[in-house]
Image (tube, rainbow, N blue to C red):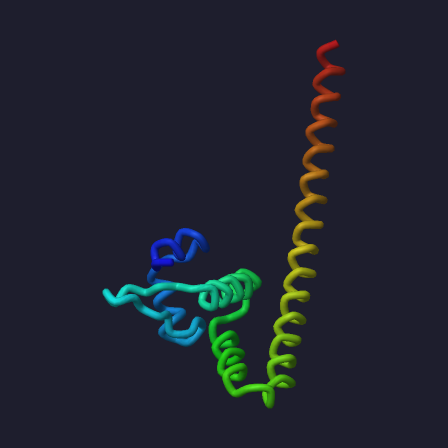
Length: 128
């Protein structure tokens, strides 16, 4: 796939894809005879992983560290697991914060709905 196709498929700008390649988040993309990037399955899988992790809030620096460790081989399995575990715990804390915010919003909406209903009942009683 050409960079424009990958950009459209994954909803990532071409500049971001080039940046990801430059900083090592995706491996160097093979180029065709004309020098145009030709993304294959390996690059696509990595892009999917990076996009998922970025959507979860993982910083680029953490992902770079993860891929640097991965390139070092099996000797870094424990370090990679620790890194991912730490990120999971941070994500769980964020989810808990978001859930608390959602609960508060739902409560405030309910307060306003009840106030509106009370006002409507009072208006209906006055008009009778």
